Image 1 (tube, rainbow, N blue to C red):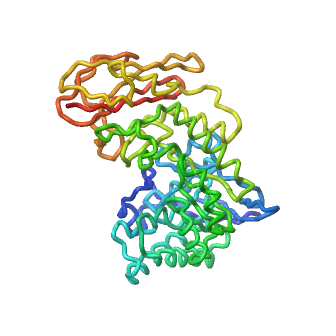
Image 2 (cartoon, rainbow, N blue to C red):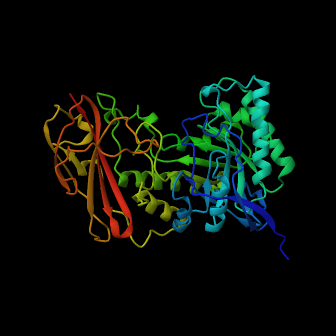
Image 3 (cartoon, one colour):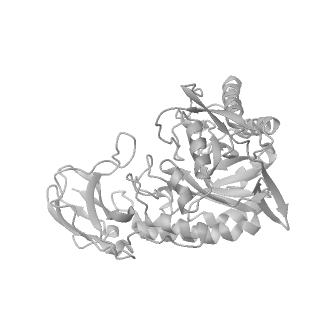
Length: 454
């Protein structure tokens, strides 16, 4: 008879709390909470192993191969399983960590569990032995608390902790956590997520953190093709996974000068163009590298942004939970089949115009001036489409850091494919955004035009 372990599940509706790769050093800087609990019985932990055969690394769960089809999630993560995902990624211990694991287990998902290592760039000093020890004790407490959960896949010790760092003692601290994991948890491997595939950093992980079993790399469209060569140059001999991938990031725009406007605004791809980028990245540089040591990946980001330079840049779902074309693309990547009903299409940036001009044309207008905009969208299934336009000030955000409500009183009728609107009364950069929805199937497309008000 299968033995059972007792787990304690915190009550309350708590949102998934995930660090979106660029910082917030205090987000996970608090003790693991002990709230009200209810007793729940769960099966024993999964046994996760790594094996190399014929030069190819593979991951196994209880003897069955598990190629990671993962999502970095901050919302709606349980729904990822319906589209073919098998794993989610978290970034640190939060007050809903137990709930995340429990809900993942119910959905048939595994969890790449994040242990957030503090960053030098945020003020943490790895020469401070007392601070490092305190952090280590917090990591130990988390490992002991969650190590036997049946949804646990592996431990991710730090996410981009080396960003803008100088002190290589970070790797010693990472190795000490991984060493502790191996001492108390024989069932789950360790990994560390780097901000890129820099050869020197990979070499330091190999030399100074030998207790790390898998290398994790966050790598977006323009740098993803370099990963294999960099791993080879660094002499990395263990498996690796891509723990964030997506279209070219806002920090990678210099090679595309036409997408950097005179006033500094960035031109965004339509949701259809992004879907193409996600699929190409997965097919060319993830699934194609299974024989080269890649054991899977995590798409960025399942949910919507709460952080970053442009809040519509990444995100596979909108705030209502409608799915963008990138979800269709990932379902095809993960399962080999598109969903029965597809998201609306806004083919490219020529399909959205403001005053007859497209986004790259450095559009500027006068305060309070009258303007027009239009979008051409289609639906692959000929479903009826609804339109919703909004104007937001560049850099603004809602209280939770996500996309704000649009500025009121500017658009005459925002439910049409072609609109008339007044320019804002304040000088600065703005974004005109359209969402085109198939409401019956909870699918959505989007396109954006940045403009400047003189």
